[in-house]
Image (cartoon, rainbow, N blue to C red; front, side):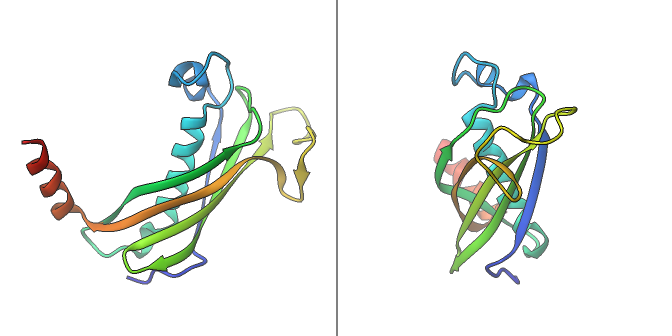
Length: 145
């Protein structure tokens, strides 16, 4: 496996009704749910290493730190970028940042809190561990039985 710090991936979505706190059960407002932001961060982390994994290998999430800084209503484009920052044996650490890409027709983010790449919606870290998929699933099945 050629895993090394610096590997990156980006996931982009437009917030839909299914992505809201109402649908996730994490609140009663129609904005991007924090659990959905977490799922996007994990998806970007997985995508960052997927091309380098040996056949039969995968990664599983073990720890997350997430700061959800800004509400993103339905129709907002969100870009989540994850970067592998540390490889410690089987343990992988990623940093991620989520930015608002602007809502269609509004001329860009323009809602304050901007940097050169847009409004920061959230940021944090994701830790994952490399596992052999079959061995991992075998252990899960035995634990349930």
